[in-house]
Amino acid sequence: MFREFNGLPAHALLVHAVVVLVPLLALVSVAYGVLPRWRSRLDWAVAALAIATPIAAFLATESGEELEQVLEQKNYPAQILDQVREHSEYGDSLRWLAFGLAAAALLLLLVTSNFARSRNLPRWLSPVLTGVVVVLAVFAVVYVYLTGDTGAQAVWGGTL
Image 1 (cartoon, rainbow, N blue to C red):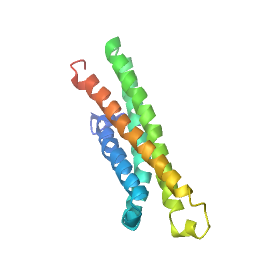
Image 2: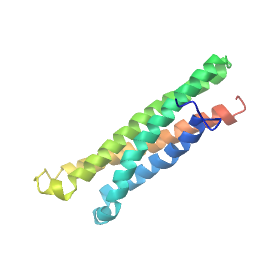
Image 3: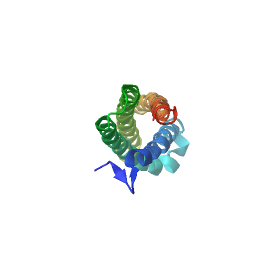
């Protein structure tokens, strides 16, 4: 299902969405949390990115698993398969970080909305969620780099 698109490995195409969307979600959701005056301008972007980013991460990891199976079936050398497995492990972690960041961003959006303000939620909830978003954003961006670097090394490092 996620193996090819127009004759190209789907993974090579889908990872570009993750490389763009995860850092963008990280930046926008952190800005939303730490810049309350900008919230009315950023709320739609947080919501859209929090929905699109986990979908892109899911599709990229699924297509990557398909590609990994193809490489294993074609009996690629162990060195290459080890690099692919390392890349895959980073990608799996990135997928969960993307899901976590998106969930935290949506919760922050909900907690700071007019609907939530009328519910008398604790005042500490918004700053705590902002802190969670910041931490997850940092980890997500680091894992975008680690995942992308190991993938690029596997492809362009002269081994594939």
